[in-house]
Length: 245
Image 1: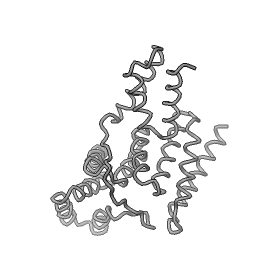
Image 2: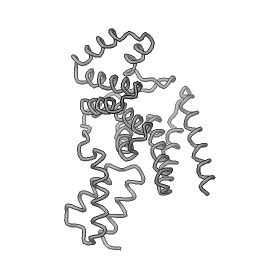
Image 3: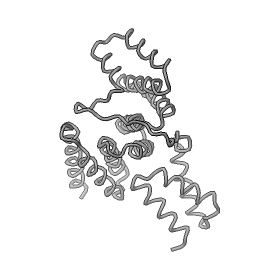
């Protein structure tokens, strides 16, 4: 095996194991660094890069070295940053909701990011996809070190079945920022499941099983709903495997 073939294999292995950022960066390095000699393989890598860049990989915000306190999921699966939207859902007071969002937008960058996240979740509930996507992007731009905003964006993309490649990149950042949150591993497993069922590429299965395994291990005793969701996903995947085989 030539060095170039080894690079191609490494790029593929990184991607199917959820290290999509590193896979993309290595592919760029190989193609632009004159490390490639096989035209067919170079073309394949260029297509790989083009696919990922079409999903926004080239323009993703980069987390910094700044330490940020990560959000902790409550037993009811909620987060403090979503309380403004939860209050609106309970009251349907649009005027009050608008005032609170405006106050957040006039505050610090952290408050502004919370405002954009709140609006993203609002538009997601309203099924206004384009508007939701724009707001999630603004949240991660303002607070790229906050796992919640990456994870919530990934979950939205995965549930809307828009692009598993974008969702995989987003959830990877959430996991790198807050690897102890079981929610992010659960979402990553769901994205791999989506990829397996749509592409019929069973190479994703080990990463899928590993992600859900990590999610189960990280659940606290109070996270009953999340534990149940993980179990249901595993059962669904088992049924899918039986139908396939």
